[in-house]
Amino acid sequence: MQKRLVVQGRLSDAHLSTLSDLFKVDVLPKTTAWDDPANRPLLAGAHGLIGSGLAITPQLLDAAPQLKVIATISVGYDNIPVDELTKRGIMLCNTPDVLTETTADTGFTLIMTTARRVVELAEWVKAGQWQASVGPAQFGSDVHGKTLGMVGFGRIGQAVARRGALGFGMQVLYSNASPKPALEHELGAQRRDLNELLAEADFVCVTVPLTTETEHLIGAKEFAQMKPSGIFINIARGKVVDEAALINALENGVIQAAGLDVFEQEPLPASSPLPKMPNVVALPHIGSATHETRNAMAQRAVDNIRLALQGERPISLVNEEAYQ
Image 1: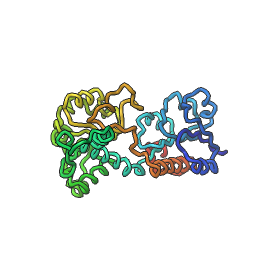
Image 2: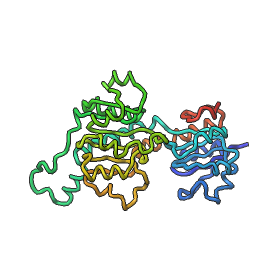
Image 3: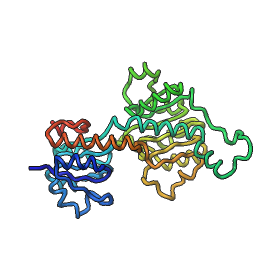
Image 4: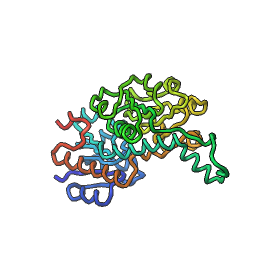
């Protein structure tokens, strides 16, 4: 019997053609939610789901009794109940590795643009306000030689740290991670507890995954521990940070600036003050948003689901127990 897939979101015609050669493929409209009642007949016969931004619920899983694998076109899977999938013998695959360097590029871009006030001063020039030599009112902060504090030191955190240490001579501190002796040797990195890191770092960059333990990991108490000249960078998940506390810290000079690619609510509401603040660089969650990387992520998801439905171990398997 030919296996059936349900696809939602960003797969190219070439990727769809690859899957269609092997499986029966149904593609949902981009505006359709997985749990739309109109999709129930497709879910009922589905052996695999593939897409981005998948919000999976136990009710949806009940509607897909033949489901064997879910392939998300992302690294994060905080909106997918992994334990529930494992209990039902459903494999979950994600796409790590292929977006590490691109996301690290985004993180370091935020470090540079916030420190040197690039967006603010570019707008200043566009507005015709550059009428004499710049003075202290337009000065920014150096990046080279400063201390970079990484909250989280997984693949992406390490890639950001390499850019800082090897490219800009930065001292690297890291917390919320197990000891990394090899990286300490390679980069001169030093492990600190979170409180120490916040107090010592000139730049605090968050790369931890979102879990129940890391939700609102950074709040008013943590911002108060940073230097007044400190710059805060978030390329992890918006809910890792208490956004109201961040806004307060920026408005009251508790910290100098913030560079943000993620937010508690996305898209960012028009009512949010963050994009209007001169000391904030706010991006629309573009961490992996390059043609090359998004294509590589989709290809990894396609490879994962193909292998899983052919009885082989996927490349990027989150819940090993489901495969075993």
